Image 1 (spheres, rainbow over the protein chains, first blue to last red):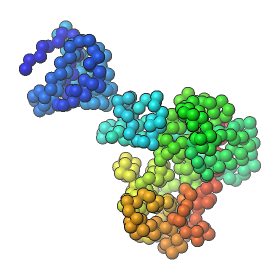
Image 2: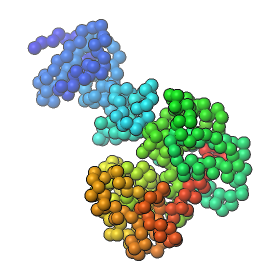
Image 3: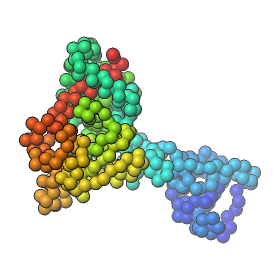
Image 4: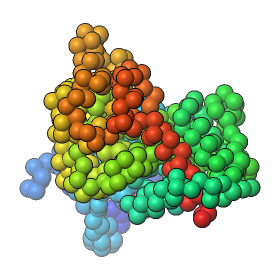
Length: 138
Length: 304
């Protein structure tokens, strides 16, 4: 299966197989006015299987969201058909409004206008906790 | 110290400063009786409380200050749907410092947004209760004179008891503390306290199912209530409940200088006969709660 290379845009490579749709939705790529190719379950020497997303336009990728979903994703910025920059992802210190706190005793359960924010409590175990009630993100 | 939301917001040095000030208040209360003259404490209690609210109010009154507030959500604008932030900002217009209790976890933290006066978390659900932790630390300081090299037994409901979790976190910062966690299997201390707090701080601990088997080792026995509704079935509750009731018989094996603590209210987990034993420190602990709040109010208002 062949997908055309892009001239100016972004390639998200080394996405854990099966996670491309989550990335697509979290980055709200459906709202873009350009072509987006989602290639899933591609053979990879490094990973066995992987997903790839190709976005045929330059836009500001939310690296925090991406790093949270999968810190191993390679973000390649393509300019004039060549990789002009590779961005390294790390686990974000905070994630905002990606998950809702499930603790029924949390203040967010009664105050609807509050942002749902989780902070990185332990990088090693990739544990995020609610900034209000410290409940572990389930 | 702008606000006090989590007991771990305080450094060991800040806690020491509070303990030293509380000691001085206990030594000569008259010295401090006008310190908060013309200052007002607002107690915003969105759920009922006896000890915490009254000890805050008593603390402010003994410092010569004024007190206003409400003692249930029904008697505040929360009943009309006002947000915690808006309530706090409004109350801040009429007061110099706020003590807030709320059934929802994180509410006092949310209340700090845009707030111009200091706020003290007076308990948010099952989450934090920093002034209880400070009360417990002052009690240990007054009764033992030090925090290092203590064997601390925590007994009863170690799963849901926020006071126990906060005290464990606070004490791990001192040297050579050994915890003995005494609880039924159903009410063991949560895994994150063992993994994220005890093991990460390299603090030694052991678990026990009855207090009799460890009584002779303890320097401090911190009792909590075992609630019937926490058990999956009544048979287990009946089988286990006596193991978590402290009486004179069980105390026979204890050290002569044991300190018995309890955050109160007590139901039946400490026999009333124990109250007359000099080792029973829980009513003194309730009194220390007032003194440490006096010290805290002064520090947070920047008064000397």
